Length: 282
Figure (cartoon, rainbow, N blue to C red):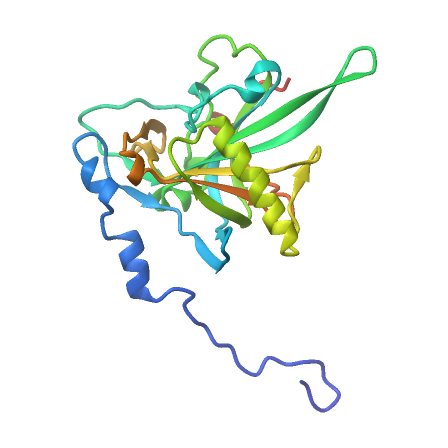
């Protein structure tokens, strides 16, 4: 409180760690089993730090930190809505290539956000569509670079779009923190497994009084595949995407539903012409 007719005053500020330094070291520096078994084919990965807010019998409430990322997305319709697709970025998000003489900075997990849309068609008709967003967090060493020093994120379309894709784009974005209700799924992240888990998570979260973000009546789904990692070369180009082949008991795939508010990424302004974000605008 304040005195002498003045407004409120800050008397003291106390800073604390939400994770002890030794815990941070253990989570971020100590190699994990999947790092050791994949040393022969890809570099170890830095992991996006997730904070577990609380745990229930059915799910964990996670906080995904804000991040600078390459965000590639397309809007899909028709058979692609339920088609089996690996949680790896599309061809147009790759701006570099793998060279045996270079070292790469890798990040895990692979993040994929899926949300339902409704598209207008001629004759006052509408069709169901889905926005699929691949989120590629920049490694810590690159996330602090000025926008002018980042290369263009657009790797080109690589040919024609898959049938059913109505638009696609790729750009650098600043993504706000996300709050998720999440749990692990067994085995590979098939479409059926992911969507079934999302429906169960949404029902359990709403039963506990949490607000699930929905689009066209369906929860916004966030897939987190820890068996996949994205590699960047020293020129800050996306150059590799590795999905490790792990025994079923060691596979680490998680599904979450977005809570509270929609995630609205802010495009990162690119200063130089070579760093303009790529979009086909359709």
